[in-house]
Image 1 (cartoon, rainbow, N blue to C red):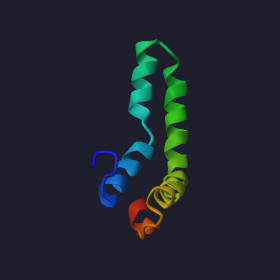
Image 2 (image 1 turned 45 degrees about the vertical axis):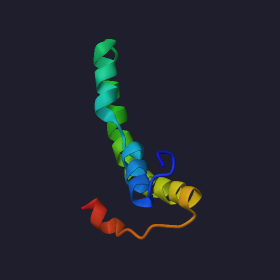
Image 3 (image 1 turned 90 degrees about the vertical axis):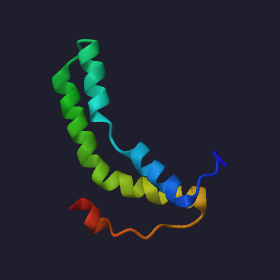
Amino acid sequence: KICQPEPIIGVFTLIITSSPGGAFSNWWCSLFNADLTLSVLLTTCSSICCVGMIPLNMFVYVKSTYGKTINIEWSRLIV
């Protein structure tokens, strides 16, 4: 049962794990005295790219995992 979650829980888990994690990157850079400006720049680029990549990831992952597509109003998610 743990490895086969219901589709609604699986889709939400995929969305959460596909989202960019900028705060975690900033924490690592701060911990190791890395270039924080570079980390912020990469987090910004990652956040911009996720607008198009998360829907693409959801299509690919849900189609391969559950064998069907999901109907989501993507325009409402952008706002």
